[in-house]
Image 1 (cartoon, rainbow, N blue to C red):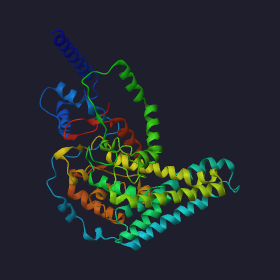
Image 2 (spheres, helix red, strand yellow):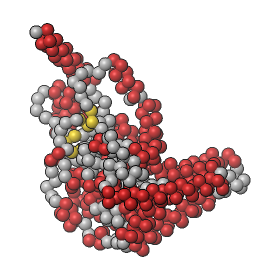
Image 3 (cartoon, rainbow, N blue to C red):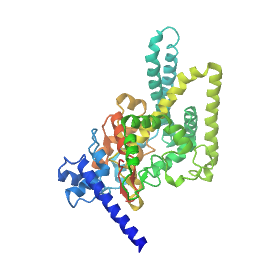
Amino acid sequence: MGRGGRSAHAFAAASDDRIVRAQHILEGSVLADKKTEELKQFAEERGLKTSGKREDLLIALHPFSKGIAHRYPAPKPLPLARPPFKFSDVQKAVPRHCFKRNLATSATHLASDLIMVATFGYLATFISSGAIPAWAGWLLWPTYWFVQGTQMTGVWVLAHECGHQSFSESKTVNNLVGLVCHSALLVPYHSWRITHAKHHNNTGSCTNDEVFCPPVRTDNGKSPTAEEDMAELVHEAPLVQMFWIIFMLVLGWMPGYLCFNATGPSKYNGFAKSHFNPWAKMFEERDRMDIVTSDLGFFAAVAGICYAVHALGFLTVAKFYLVPYMVTNAYLVLITYLQHTDVFMPHFRGSEWDWFRGALCTVDRTFGPVIDHVIHHIADTHVCHHLFSKMPFYHAQEATEHIRAFLGDYHLSDTTPIPKALWRSFTCCTHVEDVGHTVFYQAH
């Protein structure tokens, strides 16, 4: 009797908490000025019930309201209905020559990138040579770091092409070029190639995607405590958010992803998951020699860097290589994060997910014509890349025009400037619901 009484009391208290929480939501909703029809449209786009009172819609939309009403508006979400066409239909819409791989063309682009890297490095030698006023170094070194880091990202992308076997028709050539270029950029080529292929095979899956797999919110059915509310307010402070964005960009790739598989799926928790470990959970027995080969390439590059430090000094190596390398790493995190994390991109579970539907859950973004060119259009033709990963990048722009025209609303493209898109994604995309076969990112 006493136990049952306590349960009834707890239920009543929980109900009161929910009522108070609902009143708080209604009083402070950023969607309060929206018309009821607009609220119904927002709810329908996210797979929520559109029937019921206006108050019910505001409460249901509350977890998404920050993204819906954000000062940097997001594109319309991907339609939730299954595409009325097949992958083969999209393939037929793209000219056949776009799928042809040419070694000479790819090698020309690689040679051009390497020449540019060498040229920028050579020009940087004049910064501290005495030929330029000392004060100019405060401007020229950061400029060099950004420009060189961007150019090195272009080399990284060409090695990425090798991992997809789109650099040439020869697997041997692809893997040799990819191993050398990625090792020089301190990437274990085969380890990354294997997990990246799994990412492409499972894009948009809440449980099996390999990178930026969405965190889930475990709802305990209780209202936040005062301490939790305060912690949330601190976490949402702009300076704190900026700190964590910088933290993600600086350390997210190395060591975050490569060493700890950060942002990977929870199914690897409790297992070895370093890209340098041949016995890591992500790999199979047949992969082990490739992982060892990648490790040898990585540590050969590390040995070369150590020799350069011994011969030239740490400061010189840091200025000419390590800082641009960190810029490249930041690009990798930024590009990958923004291609798969935003308020308008759904994620799927169970029978709602399939490869084709998942491949459409990415977005084309532009970094501007110059950077897009330097990084070989990996960002502004990303939907094409996920649909046809073996297509060489130099055909992706043409193919994207045909893909965009064919897909219509099923093609996601966002023109929001990159810094603003990053801020919107980082502040509005903290988790998805634990349940549901189609989910969208929410904010705390």
